Structures are given as C-alpha cells and as structure tokens.
Image 1 (cartoon, helix red, strand yellow):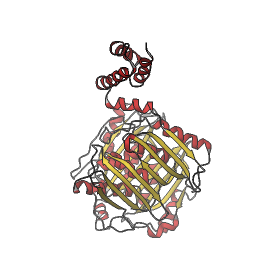
Image 2: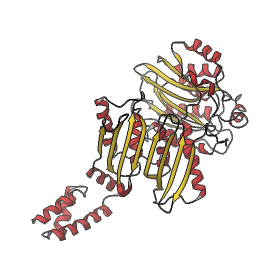
Image 3: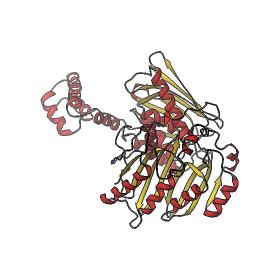
Length: 495
C-alpha cells in the first residue's frame, strides 16, 4: 500500500461507524491510488457512508467525538470571579448544557460572552458561588470540568417529546400541570399520603393562574419506586379526581413515558405547553415586569434584549426557553448587577432564519417574560427543616391552607432522612402575609423547624401578583370548590 493510501485510511477511519465497513469500501474503491486520488475517494466514501448508514444525529455525534470539548478554568484572569472557557463543536442545545451544569452547581453567572458561528462553540463565563466568592475548591473545579466535557455529547430531548420521568429504581415521578388555586398542593399531597406514597422530592411553580409540578414519590414500605400497574392506575385515577377538568378549553390528559429531561427544564416545558404565557394581562411596570425587546439586523439575526431584576438561575431559564422554542443563540452577552440583569442574544430559528412575523415576535416576548417570571421569588420565604416522615408534606401544606396561605412556589427535598423544604407564600389575595399569622403557623409546626427567610422583604410582598380584579378574583371564585381544578393535566410514569 502506498503512503498516500495509508493517510487516506486514517482519514476514513475517523468518519466510518466500523472498521469492517471501512475495509469493504477501501478494498473496492481505493486500492493503489495516489494520495490525491485517495483523498478524493475518501470524500466520496464519507458522503456515501453518511448517506447510506448514518443518520444526521449519529453523524453529528461522531463529529463531536472526533473533536472533544476543551474546558479551561482560570482563577487568575479576573479579580472577582472564576473564569470558565468552553470550546467545542457546536450543536443545538450546547449552550443550554453548559449553563445547566453551572446552574446545577449553584454558581452565579456574573458575566458571559457567547459565540457559536461557523459550527464552533466558544464561550466564556465569569462565575462566583452563592457567597460572592471565587470557586477555590479543586474538587469542585474538577467536577465542573468533567461535567461539561461529558455533557458535550448528551442529547437533549425536544420539547414535544413524550412527558415522562428520569429512569431510576429509586422513585416514581408524577408531573402535573393546569389551573392554579389555593390548597392545590395540600390536596395532592393528602391523596398521595392516603395511597401510602412518600414524597421525597418535588418542585412546584405557579404563574398566570397556571401551576406545574414534578413530584418524586416512593412506596412507604419499600422506600423504592412504585411499579405495580394496578396500584399506579389507582394513583392516577385518584389524582385525576383532584385535578380533573370541570370546564375550560384545556382538557386533562394522562400519559406514560420514560423521558430523562432535567427537572427544572421539564417544568419550563410543562408550563410552556400549558401556555402560561397567555395568562392574564397586567400593567407593565419596571418594578414588576421584565423588559424584553426584539430587533432584526438586516436578514441575519434577531437581537433579543432583556432587562430584569437579577435572581438565581435567570440565565438558565432564558436559554432553556429559547432552546425549547427551537432558536439557536449565535452570539450573546450577559451582565448581572445587584440592581439589574442585562442579557443580549443574537438568534435564529433552527431553520436558519431570523424572526420575521410580528405575531412570532410577540410570542417570543411573551414566552421569555413568562420564563423570567416563573421562578421570581414572590411571597414570604419559609424554610422547613425537620426529620422526614410519611405525610409530612401533607401536614405542612394543610396547616398553610387552614391559615389562608397560598403557595406560590415550593422546593421539596429529602436527604439522609432530613426534610429540607422551601415555600414561597402569600395570602389568598396575593398580598403579604401578616406577621401574627406567620408566628401562629410557626408555633403549630415548631419554631425551630420553620424559619422565615429575608424578613426585610416582607413589606413589598405581593406587589407583582395579579390584582384582585384579575387573577386573584378568578382564583377566589373557586376557593369553595376544594375538589375541583379547572383544565388540569396529569402525567404519571414509573421506572
């Protein structure tokens, strides 16, 4: 074999799914060709293999394996932040994967510079921890690097894929979406307790009269996932009785699936699919609403500019929504300050075109506003820390309901037998909770178990909630219907 053919062999081997397939084509198509002819034949074989044996997704994965990501973490490049630089082959969702890793590590993105033109992803992030310090722990830095590099080839399911649960033997996952009302979480958790299900983790969001939840439960006796089909059917039926649709245009559904989508991303998808961005219209003020504007630059990009109050996980929420709406970020920058966060992204649809219609521009603006608002910390923050037990969540939420509190958002977690839950609550009209009611609840639950966080924010609670004449008026009209929930969908799945 000539030297040119050897070079051609190396070139082809990187592009073929198996060595045996290479040898079959090599023996019939290359033989003793010269270098130039061999390379030409390589190109033809590569095109043939791509066309006949590999679909686009497999081919893209192969290219990414040929060009693994490069992550550089530098604590000397900036005086006040750790700098993380990521270079890799670009694909739809790469930016979200990286931001998701940083968000899952509870890091705060102070600044970011994004560029992904020409098929290559080159981003720089300046991050700090929750206390405002650089990331000094070498184990944490190594973990961040491994996670980003390993996630580079991870496939993110599209928005419209089946509703489901992270495949695991540890728990059964339930997803809920529909119309919000006071006492909803209390009723759902009570049903689960009666069915001998223990809630080990959950996250609940509400926005614009809509609610979404992802709840992980185990069997009380085995502390493992519930897999019996008959029991699952019973759980599904009884939960549907709580959240079934009585009126409205959004019908309830029950779907089984095995999706492994990230939990917080799944909540965004559920609420987007439930069209929470079409909620009640409210007066736009700088204090209560984010500012989102769109502008086209000739025929190349649509520039999305966002200004809002800074908060944790803000960048993730925006990038997640753009990705699920099938938009690709080609360039961008993020700058967060204590008073305001500024984000600017140059985007196109996956079909390569900017946003051309006014209707689609309005839809994108509404969806991004909703993504920013869903996790906004409205309400008084209450933190529960107690020994975990069956029925704990049901008891806590029942106490809230009996004292006329509405749960705006909640994060439920259990680790090593300890329950650590965070609730954001208002009264039933969306106004701040009176201090005497809070103290009464703490006495009932346990002063040492339930703590009030950020008391200094109490005076401005509820300012961004809908007015009594709009959303809350609608909710209060149903307050005496404890066993009905309009337009609710329930998705139940097990591993």
